[in-house]
Length: 130
Image (cartoon, rainbow, N blue to C red; front, side, top):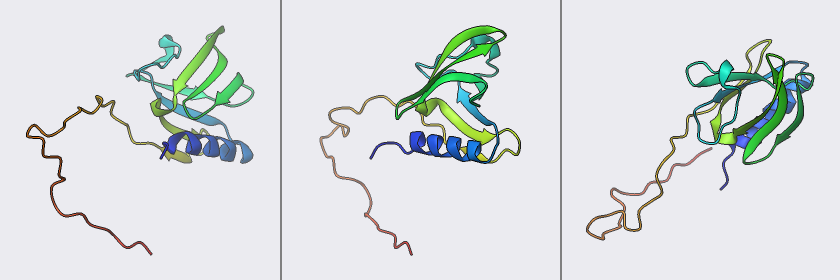
């Protein structure tokens, strides 16, 4: 299945706007491919105001969020991979969602077991959810 994060970000963005609040994104500025204004990054993180009055040409798809904004009076284009979003919340009350940090993992090896035995360890289990 595809990651749920982009769908949740879009839904929460709409929910925050529908409640007359200001949507803020907390972004991992060090995530590969992230383009944000470096002068506003602290501890590899940046908080961005995504209110319609603060930005232009907002695009949110399953891969990334992009928009044009002004930072210190200078127009800049911002591009944020969906996996770089750490949280989306309303500035006024803090309601929103924090996401787990997904580690950037290396691609899987062709043969993960050195002896060629690819059987999983332990017993499989199922859990009944009511």
